[in-house]
Image: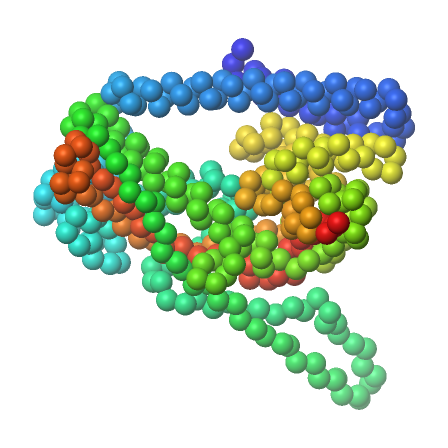
Length: 403
């Protein structure tokens, strides 16, 4: 069965469950059994879709590795993207492979000069494609507001919390009273991230049937994606980005009780939702890791109805996401597991977290003796990025009980 057919099956089952949990006359015994069977069927379909996707990904990787894929210039030729063509040429042959016209294109599309010997300051089209690919890691780039700047100097955002401010009634001929607005600033500095060195066999570079541009870029994106998502989630803000967990205001701290050391109650989830100002709840979402998601799926409301509602084609562009207490769910594996005093669940308007990218990705190509004697070429990518929660009131965090 095709992935599309499986997704259609999942969507139909999810709609049935959505209608079931929202009906007025929930029957704990009979309806719960139907719900459990439906969730089990959705889990089975999800597992089958994942298996097919993993097989497809493995076949694609093996195809690339065994040199059966199209030439590395395919993407640039089909799309007319000159930047990708130059990038692929440089990956294979280094600086000497580029002619004066190629270097002219690089200078015209970048705000900075080219790198030092062995370096390539990737032009805007390639830099954008690298940064877009980072969205697949962890959920932060999907949920946050992402901005790009050409410079890397300190960028400060003005902040002001007006949720407690309100107007007044004034008698005829009376004067209005004063109430100044308090402003603050939140900085959004950038930090330098390294992909660590990626080594590639010379054979892959020499064979024109290998999509080396996709191969190398995939490796560096893997590494940059993982480290940036981790720090955008839990970074301390000291010599690194301040993560969303670090910057968020505590909304609920569970009272000491073994029932909420590695778990959370329905009441705590409701309290966490309502700790966020209603003006921010309109665009609010949940964020936690997959292990926490597993536990939340077991929780029921005061009428014994499950609070988790599966989405229609969850994870598919345009599909309805999974929901918890009416709000969408973002899975981020870098959020802590539920444990003693852990900040394990976030709720709020995640767009209040800003990610700033400096639109210049610089890659270095190493062909010194350490690599040459092994028949390899080394690649190292640098990028500059930063993140901070601009308005801490937009996102609240749940803290598990200490004991």
